Amino acid sequence: MKFSTLLTIFATCITASNALVTFDKRYYNLTEEDIGEQIPFELYITSKDPLIDRLTPIAVNENPGMDYLYLLPMSLNKTNMELTYNPATKTISSLKTQSEFIILGDFATLTEGSSFQSMTFADPTLMETRNLTNNELKELNKNYNWRKYGGRTIVRDYHVGNFYACKDTHDHEGYSKGIYGLMYYSDNEAAPNSCIEVMLMANFS
Image (cartoon, rainbow, N blue to C red):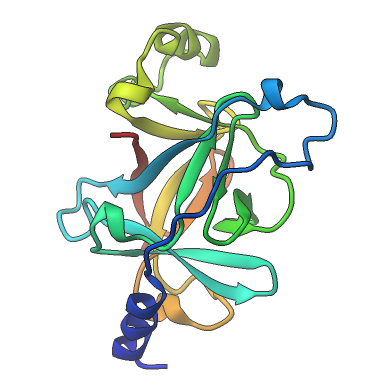
């Protein structure tokens, strides 16, 4: 598939929607009060590489019940995911695709089903201090106002891994031959040399 055709597909799937947030019965052991509010927000990446700085993740279906995330230069209010964050369950969900943000293998995905990974948001300036212990980072970040300032998306824990922009990820449809896919590699698993480390940032404004 040509890159121009892929961009056309992305543009077609970005439509306005007024989907309602409803109580998710999958959290069967929690009351509706426990679930709490679902907070709308958007994701984008920051990078030291100016060619990819501020790109926005876009969801593309490649497997039944699973969308891979790719990075394109689109404005935050025109993405096709309609994300919400649930601070009670620490999960990110997509109203548009009725799925949750989950790292599967090395791929950042929106996948149907309940997430088994907690997501939090941290002061991005703290994350450059990698000589601190995990507990020290948590303590420093404890009073950070992510609702006001946004923050760096943290999967499970502070020192588990990092997000990367990668091409040639061996995705099913081969889209990553032409555009960057959003990937996640743990600290004990080296990312390919061609990948660029990024911060996945949340915008709640």
